[in-house]
Length: 393
Image 1 (cartoon, helix red, strand yellow):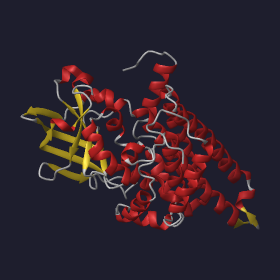
Image 2 (image 1 turned 90 degrees about the vertical axis):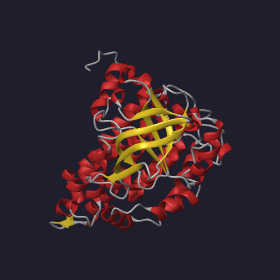
Image 3 (image 1 turned 180 degrees about the vertical axis):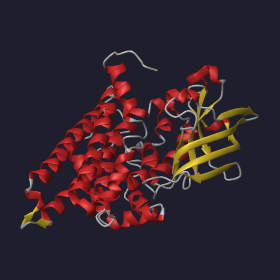
Image 4 (image 1 turned 60 degrees about the horizontal axis):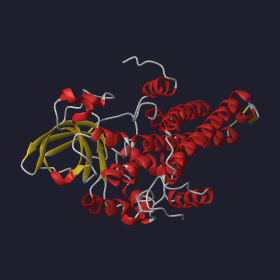
């Protein structure tokens, strides 16, 4: 594979992306839909899948070669996650990988040499699970209202407060944590980013019961005086929001890629059933009421994938693709949910059963229209930033 020292240096060639897809596909062949349904039903983290991906070097694909990673960019990482989702793993498989693959992006760009040398090689090998702690119950999409406090103590900080929707907090050793180091009046300027240990002496974790993606828990995390030394500050004190924001564009791209993969898995199931299911002496796929919705879903997914690649390649060569990335995420999330919903409709009653797995795709595709940002907030960005319309909030 083509190796580069850091993202944003060059476009990954198409033949490299094809090789990445082929390699990941071989790993995914050992983990079928029944495996993922069992993990989801049992609320069991897919440790064996994660380890197989780590052993293949796929977890560290976007981490610079200087730290043991593959040195490839967002296009390669998006390809990995699209293939994983399309294999039937959907969000359960992608969420097991996502934060380890790209969660330490702020450390790559803003972290000290000590932080980089301590944590990036472990992340690249798959040895380190990482959680991402930003969302709070009283802040939501308004990050300026974050209240988790980092109070100054000798040699560092003590963290107090509560985060929610912290993915992989049960498995993670560290959390990339956005906390307030200055009064709320400073809004974004009062936020600092930390790479903190999830020390059970000071941290309690509670999984949040939810509709889907149950193999990878989303958690409420309570911090009760968690000590964090100065050496664990990522970047500059007070500029944490800026550091986190710098990673939002590639995150949008990766989530969009995952959405496309879920949609493709759903269409594949729907098409297979439409070919095999015979009613009134012919396959139901011969009826345009069945075939046209599936064809339309396929077209929407292909268009969304084109936007994903456009954004990913642009990011990798250093272009400003924030608008394209946000539109890619918006279009992919809608395309995935449309595809999953139409697959359920194609299977009829069996689509509502767990036997054919499309109900699981439907549940996980629905999440993509909410997380990590809602469709409405994405449209706000497009309207205000790309179209120059005034803010409504």
